[in-house]
Length: 289
Image 1 (cartoon, rainbow, N blue to C red):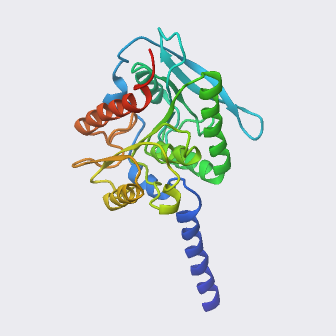
Image 2 (tube, rainbow, N blue to C red):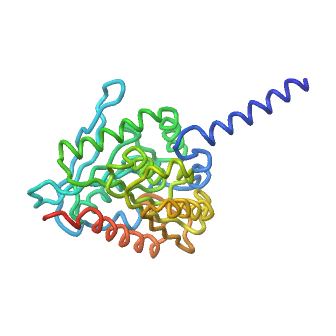
Image 3 (cartoon, rainbow, N blue to C red):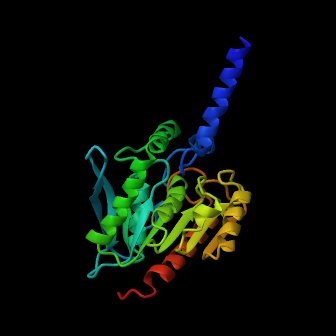
């Protein structure tokens, strides 16, 4: 009986170690706890119209390992004549829902070709339980998720002929915005990270990054905790990287999500303005309109 008990304990520990270290994805159990009573309702930031007329619609930008099409939402300025700088937009754990499409149009309204990718490949969550299951699918197939992002980048570079490309994502998408930077450490032109509990502080990993990074985090968040955020910033700065970190007092996890009930208006509005200014500096400075 004692041997069985010890074996069970060892297996439990091994499972938790695996969950904590298996790949760069967000830890689903911790994320679930933060969103346990949340719902994907539109927040104030996802109810604002673009600053200029935009065109938007569904596009196929890649395919799965099973040759199933991967569709995203593409938006660009309505009067765009020449290829413009682009943004890979990465959804929260809920998936590519209507609120992400609104934010993609808002980014297009700032002068970008914005592609909202779909890491859940056609599925959208309406409850935290459904979202947790979808996150689990991503964790179980990190190679597929990486291939998804790679195809999005290739689509913007070759089909849309974007002269510059950035990544931007919230929460789960914040982690994947950093993952996108790690997939294209020398080619991505900028990365915008809204929290994302899966950010790494590993020096060897972060050393490869060549693009400027901006990050927005809540001082009341626990995924990632402020100590992790400051270590992330410290490591990047010690490596000589261009990084700008904003930690908002009174803001917790998902304070700026397009969907959810944790919205903090002042922090979200300030982060949006800073993100837009950052993107303009690094994507549009040498771009001719």
